[in-house]
Image 1 (tube, rainbow, N blue to C red):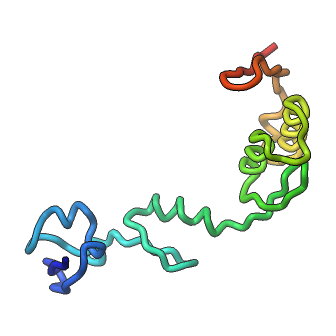
Image 2 (tube, helix red, strand yellow; image 1 turned 30 degrees about the vertical axis):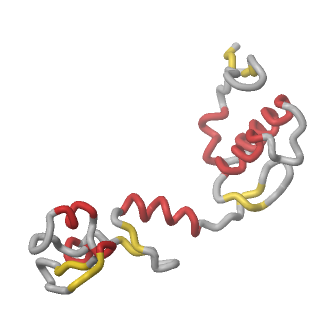
Length: 138
């Protein structure tokens, strides 16, 4: 199904309009181009209806050059992703919760951006295996 844009008079299909504009009906709808709601990716030419959606999509194109602090796999876009890999239990270099905790602390302390946060780190112990476990401060 297509409809004519009220501003540029071009006929476009449903995907050429935002859902809000489409709901306005024939004669009142303005296409994405006229509304200015098209945000294009310069890497792959995909388009998005909002700036935030484009920002989220751009993470797909980030270089994956951060290595896991334990196993050394260089396939992560950020240090946080590498730490998640260790915490997930899928890291082939981690055996046990305590080793994972030590490796994460070692990795974080080597990151220059973490410096201000590493000066007064409380000692943590893990109080519960499996689901619902919590960290305790001493």
